[in-house]
Image 1 (cartoon, rainbow, N blue to C red):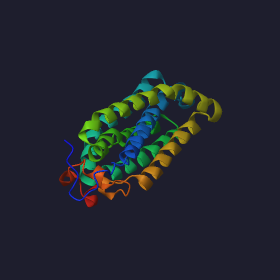
Image 2: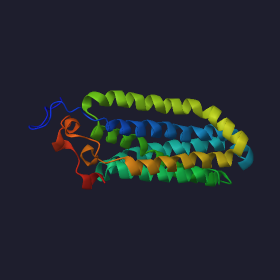
Image 3: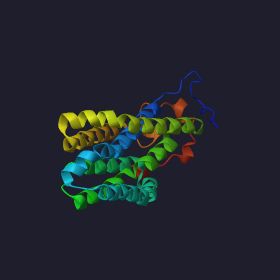
Image 4: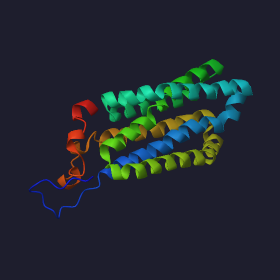
Amino acid sequence: MVTPLMPGLDPRQKPTHARHVVILFALLLAVLAYVDRVSLSMAAPFVRRDLNLDAVQMGYVFATFAFAYALFASPSGWLGDRFGPKRILVFAVLWWSVCLAATGLTWNLASMVAVQLLFGAGEAGCFPNLTKTMTIWLPKSERSRAQGLMWTFARLGGAFTPPIMFVLISWLGWRWAFGFFACLGLVWAFFFVTFYKSTPREHKGVNAARRSAFPSARWPSPGRCG
């Protein structure tokens, strides 16, 4: 329930929309996360040829990512609660971007499995902590819509990966294609660190009218969120 404006506030003051930037960051990262995880599936025929892998060995590679993702999803959510989603998201995106670039440097089954293990562990921190940012920044009435948009954009990212990967592989080769996607993660992390604030009260663009829509007693402290 939206609380009334605090005494002394101008009732004509309109709430600001700084929270929309948070939604934009979430949508972009959702797309990027799915593009990154699906890219190996599109490059699989080229990877198998160059690394001399058969279908069973390639299955081990995919299973390694899924295992690591499932194993680290809950711990990464706990870390977001403990240290704040901003720190964990930045670390996770940088981590998996490095791993994505390292995918292009693999030379055999063991190296590919090792990279996918680390890659899955990094990507596991994405959606639990994006959800945490929405919990902090959005009123309850807007969270379901934002979650729906996030997952829609995530699936769209997966759907558009095949043609994008085909063009990149044709142009750069599969190894450099992974490096290209890794650079996109670094760009996202840079802008996220620059513009995202851990709580609405830290953002200069959030006025008192918008703050009144949040139960301030439940806002995480800046020191805890980072």
